[in-house]
Structures are given as C-alpha cells and as structure tokens.
Image (cartoon, rainbow, N blue to C red):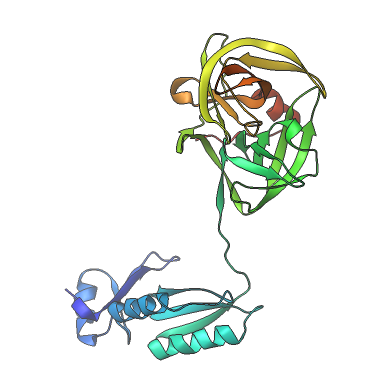
Length: 304
C-alpha cells in the first residue's frame, strides 16, 4: 500500500502504540485508517537499508562498535566507542556520511564482545598447561574433575578465549571442582554428543546395570553400563572414594567430562575421574557422582 514511501514501523514501549513512518504526507490518512499513528520523515526504509548495506562493505576499525537502521529516528546509527575514538573512526564516520545524509553518530561507553556457550564434554585449558573437559554447566560456571586444577587456577575455553577460575577443587579423597566463568560464557543445559546437543533435564541417579554414556574432548561420546557404586580407587596421588565404576572407555583429556543416563540421556550423573585402558582396546572408567559436587559447593545444575 505504501510502496517506496514506507519508512519503517515501531511500537512505543510505554504506550504500545504502533507508528508507521512515511515519506509522503499524502499517505498519512491511509495509515491512520488502519489504526496506526503516522509520522512523516525524510528517508524511506529502502534508502536507510541501502545506506546500511553500503556500510557493510566498508572495513571498520575496532573503535567503531557497530551500525544499524533506527526506524524511530529515521537514521542509520553509527556507534563509536568514546574511549577509543581515533582518526580511523573519524574516517569511517566521514565515509558513512558521504554514503547517506541519514547517518547519525552515537558515542557509547562499551564495546560488544562475542559470547560463548558452556557445554558439557567440550574442552577447556588450564593455565600453566593441560586440557580437561567440561562436566556440566551450573549457574555461573561449570563442574569438572578436581585433579584438573587447583583453586585459583585460570582457564580458557575450547577456543582459547579467557573463560574462568577454579573456585573450588578437591583431590585426592574426592575428585571434583567447579569453575566460575566470566561474562564471555553462558551456561547451557547441553552435553556434546558428537557435535549435537543432549539436553540436560535433571540428575536422577542411574542404577547398577543401567546404560550410561560419557562425553569428553579427546574421545567424544562413549557408552557402557554402570558396574558398581561407591568404589574406592587408589591413584598414584592418593585414593578417591565414592566413585562409580563403568565399562565405558576414556582417555587423557576426557577428565572432568559429562556422564549422562536415562531417557534421551537427559539425566546428569557425574564427571570423569580416571580409569584404565583406552578406547582402542577397551577399559574401565570411574566418575565422581554429581550430587556431591552440587551439594558441597551449593551449585545449581543448568537444565533445559
């Protein structure tokens, strides 16, 4: 109905009223007849979108944090970090204004950064060396094996981006820990199953003889059965009690990773501690049950 005179539409957050922008005053009555408010503006949506698309092909310095079409102000907003604004930013702004007079510059105080998902079974790296696997996401971080890092050790994620800090760790005696993640990371109710996601729904404990599967950053998704509970394992560093024994294989780097069971493997069980053998010849693997970890540190499992 409005064709090239259409200049966007937006809802007032306070009143809920719908406003439609038009570049032709003669279309105002038609808009109002449909129950919306009308606002006459100089630039059509096609013109604004075209200017924004043209800007997408221009290389921007990091001091320019983004650009977008803002229907309500009938402008193409270019955001510049006021704390790092430099000559490169000013050149970008000049180019933007040469593309369209609709460009409006807004200075902002912060710059956006990528956000990453915390997912069971994915790799993480410990400051000073070593790789382990995420157990389960909890509010504000994730649980893993205690032998992976001591309290205070820092971590980076699977992508080597700064991730978090061990806030608690116990090994030997137990084999559990938790890492508090920074704002780069979002806790997700997921476990990595060969690239797809198993959704964690709860933490009901599986019985002896039940099928169980684990996820780790070295050998991926591996399955077996629960063979025994409350096992004590005597590692070279000391004994660990209260572990669950399985015949699913694991290898170095899988430590700390997720164990799941139940319908759709949606019930979280624990985190990989250690074992014997490998995934070529088979082996025995033990995990630290999850319930004790959550209880000791007062953590809340992230579920979906």
